Image (cartoon, rainbow, N blue to C red; front, side, top):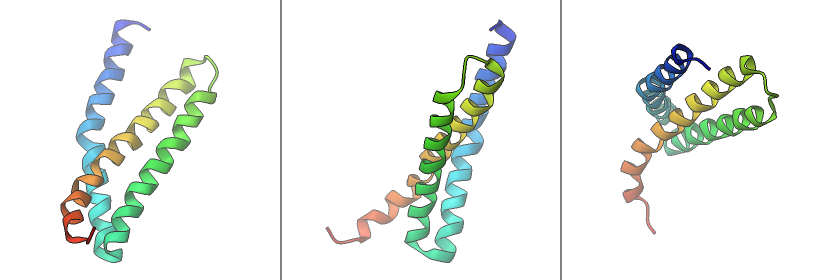
Amino acid sequence: MNAADAGALAGAFGLMNLFARSHGGITSDFLFKYFGFRGRIWAQFSALFFEAIFLFGFGSVDSQLVFHLPVLLADCGFDHRRKGTPVVTMQWSHQFPR
């Protein structure tokens, strides 16, 4: 991989930090509005589930770079989305009895 392609890939990964984490929090807030705390749990579960699907897909791709990059970027997008969902969930966890 040449330096220009590597830089574009690194830039895409950095942009995912900005947008995917906030999208995870927005999705969690949206589902909380309609389903309560269970909606937040479902938001985190769905992001984790699709992250696992794309990770298995990434593992099964042959050595063709054309398929590696989109699957890897989709996996990283769901990974960052999953990291954005528990931020709001942890604020509510103190209200439940232990």
